[in-house]
Amino acid sequence: EKATHNICTAQALNALAGMTGLALDPTPPATVTDFLGAIVETVLTVRAASSDHTLLLDSSLVIEGEDCSIVFLLVPDHGGAGELLERVGLA
Figure 1 (spheres, rainbow, N blue to C red):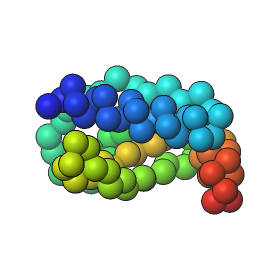
Figure 2: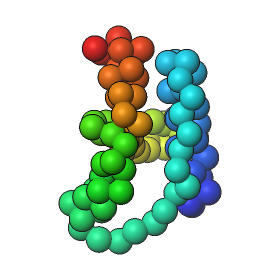
Figure 3: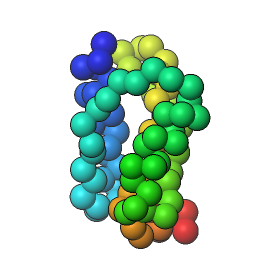
């Protein structure tokens, strides 16, 4: 099941990269078990030195006839959030 998640995540990121023309390089996946706030805080603390903004994308997909919900936490490099939003017409 993790492989399916990784493939779906990579495809969604590739689609976003294709829509924006940006080079989007994912970090290796990790599995953690904790309260959501603790997980998000850990991710943001590690990346806070290189970014001022974080994007949370809530996606609904249909994969092989099954509904699938994926939440992406994007922590772009400094200035990347604004550029990404601008390229998709949201800024």
